[in-house]
Image (tube, rainbow, N blue to C red; front, side):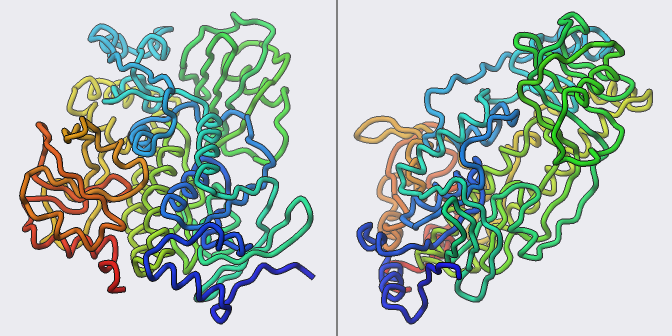
Amino acid sequence: MLPVCDWHADDPSHRLRRIFQQSHCLFPAEVLMAFRDAQVAVVGGGPVGLMLACEVALHGVPVVVFERLPEIEWRPKAEGITGRAVDIMDRRGLMIGVAETPITPPTTEQQARIAAGERRPDSLHPKAFPGARHFASMFLLRPESPDLLVPQQLLEQDLARRAAELGVEVRRGHTVTGFTQDDDRVRLDVDGPDGPYRLEAEWLAGCDGGRSMVRKLSGVAFPGTDGITTGYRAFAEIDDLDFHLPGWFRKDGGLLVYEEGPPRFITLEFDGPPENRDAPITAEEFQGALRRLSGTKVTVTEVKKITRFTDNARQAETYRSGRVLLVGDAAHVHSHWSGPGLRLGLGDAVNVGWKLAAVARGWCGEDLLDTYTSERHPVGAQTLEIQRASIALMRPGPHVDALRRLFTELLLRDEANRQLTSLVDDLHIGYDMGDPSLTGPLVGRYSPDLRLRRADGTVRVAELQRDGRALLLDLTAGSGLRALAEPWSDRVDVITAECDEAPADALLIRPDGFVAWSTPADPASLPDALARWFGPPAGTA
């Protein structure tokens, strides 16, 4: 018989929790200790699961994270935080002190070398183009802001630190084996180090990767395209360090990446997906890929870290099924070129985290969670299209060679380069915020990181959102906006300041950084926007 950690609608403790929620008060920590369940359960303790847990916990909602691995896995994964994900880290005060990679766009001479032909030995070597990012192995993208080139594992460590500060319970070595849901709860079956047990939660978030158990059991369809490649990312020792020139090279069979000191490799062959992605990777298997692509008899003497991948591209039909939400790779999978997975998953987490907290706290109705799918599903779909295009442009053969030369010449034009960089870095994203009468020119777009002058000094918008709360920026004195927003003061901070580069007189910024209302909309429409995103005023729910 499994031990059961239950709380029910007719249980006094459940009623007490609801009283605190509906009164818009934080649930006292000493009362929480009486509960062995959670309002939100997160399956998957990678960076996306930890980020989501932190976002929910910022608003005083109890969260439990289940991670099957007993400790952080150090096999090759994402090696940098790029694009919009850098802004997300900044808005939450994460990865502070991590060195940024400076932006030094390729010179005109360097760009011309690529346009003239990509067969030169150094034409695709990343060290020849500091600050540039590749698309389809073409080093031509010029990002607008610095990247954080750090292994994914360091981000996981920083998120684990933040989760601990926020009181998130992370249960490592605990595997969720199944769940059921009804109208008001989800029941999870868990295998822990001390045996199986059961836990109940109001909401379940599946952050458990591309082969998500949560997605499969929720019955959400996962249509898409099968992979056509097999690739390896590895740190390995070889018998001949001069077996090939270092750099990125398209070959007759695919792509070979070789970086010196310590040796790092990426191989990609267009010979179909792996027969068994779960099978152990042997040195001989990886060595075969190196030999086929390099045309040499190089020998792999030691494999230190290695991972196998392909380019299947699939997306969940919906990101919500009842009381279950799919976040990150559980909602979408694709090839990893240009590093979209971590960036896209973190964007999912900050989009749905504050919404889930608002529903769990009783501020908003469950329909707010439907905006997670309506806003993020199109973003995921476009990412899949970009990644399919990237794979297509890496195919070997003279027809693709011609297409790449044409594509490279187009990317030498600043407008085209900026547009593709914006797409790859998720800087283009805009959401439909609903009622057109509430909109201004910035509504639905990511808010600029304005520098605000207040009586106590200058502060950036990003620094004001470290606690995950919404902001109403009143950049003109005597507007009366503070009085209009006062009934939502438990959820929205009103900031009165001056700003030289202000794009509007007033902006309402959601916790995820997107503008929900701005002038020149009629100030009288502000309460409608506040109610739309943050629920009824305090005391009227």
